[in-house]
Image (cartoon, rainbow, N blue to C red; front, side, top):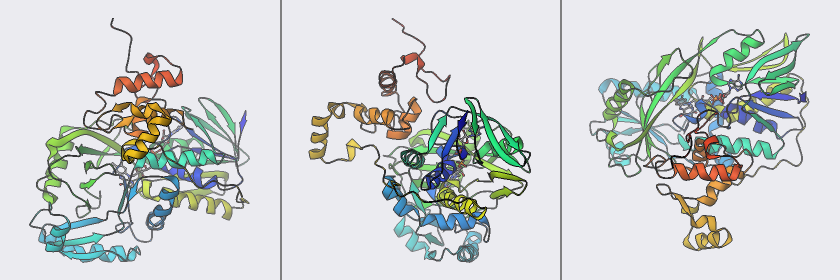
Length: 479
Ligand SMILES: Cc1cc2nc3c(=O)[nH]c(=O)nc-3n(C[C@H](O)[C@H](O)[C@H](O)COP(=O)(O)OP(=O)(O)OC[C@H]3O[C@@H](n4cnc5c(N)ncnc54)[C@H](O)[C@@H]3O)c2cc1C
């Protein structure tokens, strides 16, 4: 039987951030995920905003963690080579009723210790963001709201944790957790049993099912779907900030913002549903996005959509972000209600979990050989012509452009496949280097990516999946 000190369930933002933090200490950690790739579930289908916590419920654990996390991103993204930009958010009030709510929202930001929120006049907002609704009466500016590449972020946390000794068991579903005398004993997975002292439940949508395995099912998770449009980089109407509506109780509302790669992101909806797997987009949901966002940015050109997607927020019932350890179950850490801000708060949660383990008597000693730097995949299209020439001379695969929309070379795809925790599927390649994320959505490069994956991993093209096992894209030859 495999043996470790800590099993982290879930390789999403939260699980990987915890593993990354633990990798600084002398303790054995194994991350288990039923997906074939790191990156999680909600963690790869969200708005990709690093929040400030201005609108969190004051005094809650969520507010503390989001507020604490925001300032960690400058250094962390630098050392892990993760695309991140502090572009700031604006909250325009279009109606008088919305305008009258601004002091209350600013006051809430203050209660959350987000002091740099500023009032702006309508004219000031229009100068910052000329495509705003000209009827804007004024609004708030939240300078530290930021955007990140959520895929690279989680991959980088995982890769760096792995460099520092954390093991990953992917494609392994946790089926049971065994306890003995009020202590965690082992985790049973579809790939075998693991003896462990700790289990950290960061299973997102399924954290209630994991909790049930140890008799701690005090809550249920209800999926709250969020649908999005992604607009072409050349769309006629763009924004430079995160343009947020005045939030409601249920949702932060439908926004428009740039992505790290220059597309426009428009959405999301907030729709509770029974299914934890239904990630379809619907015309009703998408129409509601278009209608709502037009109030903020009237000329948004939805016809420039290149794709739509949806993500499922792991909404806890009863609501709220919870961190639980139990006196009658030593070694079990339960995280639940990591709903709408989990991408942001993940890094603070990593630190919080480690501190709580110490409070509960775990003697964690820092490693003296922790490697804090991680280098991402070289982006050929962003290099100077001199550097590009040099790269091609060193490795001719840089001279072969596979994805024309995003200018991604064969060398980048090969690196994505062969680096630690590398890509095994077409979507995993896409999330690492953006091949297939452009205007044609993989229509041109898809078959070539399949061939490269087959060649590099020694498999047949018919064995290459779109994402998880069984989602093959090629069935055989036609002639
Ligand atoms: C529409 C939408 C918009 C959002 N926008 C933002 C935003 O702008 N900013 C922000 O900070 N947050 C945002 N969020 C929230 C954020 O995405 C989530 O809170 C966060 O990604 C949760 O991370 P996680 O690691 O807890 O869960 P996940 O990413 O869901 O990962 C959980 C992992 O657990 C694994 N797992 C589950 N059960 C098992 C099992 N039995 N065995 C093995 N593995 C298992 C799953 O396979 C999965 O990989 C948004 C979410 C959505 C859906």
